[in-house]
Image 1: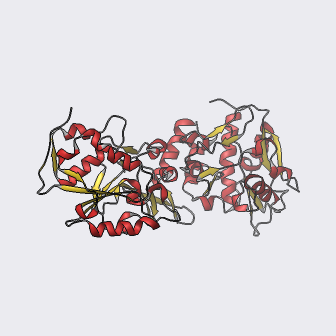
Image 2: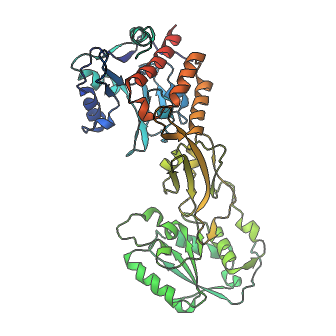
Length: 162
Length: 305
């Protein structure tokens, strides 16, 4: 399978820097839906008060190299753009079968009941609003290989999280 | 060639045709019958007044203005009264469903004996339904009524193949497909009266479970509501225990992942576990989000390595 270019960008999330202001959710909802309704936001921030370290986590699209969502999409509405590295969804091809929502371990795509299709992060076609509006710098755009190393350090090298 | 026709019913049938506010598509198809067969030889006469008729052929979904006319026409026709509802509008109000002036469907106003499906039904179908209603014997009617290649009949769903994703219900322009979840299983039901045979469901079905069969009889009597249905058991969430999506859909997705991606054994078992968690739980707890990101990071590492 074709690999995406290493010089493409992805969004990375650094839980230690996040303050939980959820500006990203608002910015996303406004940019995509024109309304301040965070339930329609493509990025969600989770908060756990019990924890001492890493109180926050984000449900955000990783724009995977070999996306599971694209693999399971029956009408091939979800496509990985090999040039930009973005995993985007074509609403006019989507049939609303919710396979992507079911298959993604993070359930990144969400079902839009009004449009009767699944919607997901489209990288704001170049300049992600969540990153632009992140006040603490927890969300940032960085090169794919750097992001892979960062995520590896964050999620693969440490012991099981408690 | 004009087929030989004869009528074995005891009396000649006189039809009163009533247009209860449709688009006139069905009316044109009704007129098309005369191009197929000599209607008079079928023992069918067209009545000019409802008082002369004993069969009421209704097209359209009935609106505020036609409702009373329809009621009085029904009262006026001679007994035994037979009412045939032609087309989707008559059966369910079709594309006019939800219109401000609509008062139908027809069976909400008067009793309907026969329904003829289609938007509009072909003249052959209307003739076939009339032949059934009036017990007409028409020589060569089988050839006449045979569905031409490319025309579609009732939708049928294959219980074995259906994954219960609900894509068919989302695309159905006539809202003919019901997805009912009653706790432990999901029911996919194709409503017979609403279907307009557009085959959108067949086109989008990811598992090719829906088929609009060629050559089906598309008229029916009385209260038959669904052509076919599939029952899918739902999987219970590993964490909260609530049923969320059908087993078949999860299996389908996993099979597709196996086909298209090269996932290592460890990642696959993690992915399989994550599929057993409902969508709400996946996005609820930090540890689950972390686990999911771990899977994705692991896949990315293997790929870049």
